[in-house]
Image 1 (cartoon, rainbow, N blue to C red):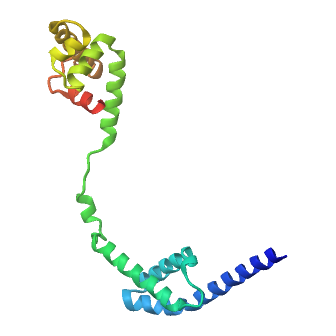
Image 2: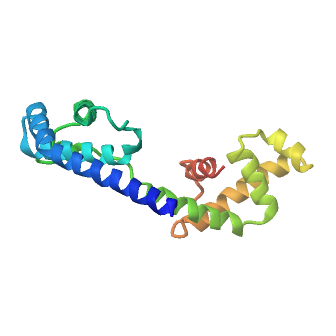
Image 3: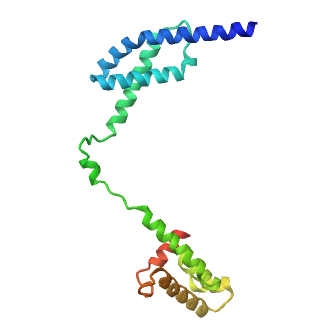
Length: 190
């Protein structure tokens, strides 16, 4: 039976605390209005204060000054919001936002996926040679040593792999990759 009394006692304390906080809302609104000088901002500030107070109600020491505790939360929230707003750019018309541009990542992602499929379709020895030289940045000599073949063989494999990739990635012209797009994509894929 003492557990039931403990639960009721805790509920009574929570109810009392909640009632005391609700009774403070008009005072909080007045203080928020004096800080922000805007009714909508004051309401937002009070709401944020109440959320923080409720979230951290365990840190309030019963018997201490609830009003001072709430006003401190409200004041600190106001200064935090003010600092945050100082870093923001006022742009009600959207003119500033319209000037901001970033490169779309979807195109590169699609190109990278095309490259992966094309690489998978190459013979293993061509793919390996191309990746060692173009993506890993090894010299032909280093790649030849790793693959256990002549430098000329690696050069031939890399050249054939580039031509095959160019044909797979640009089937309309089939031209070799003169602009280094394949090497750039390989570097991204590495």
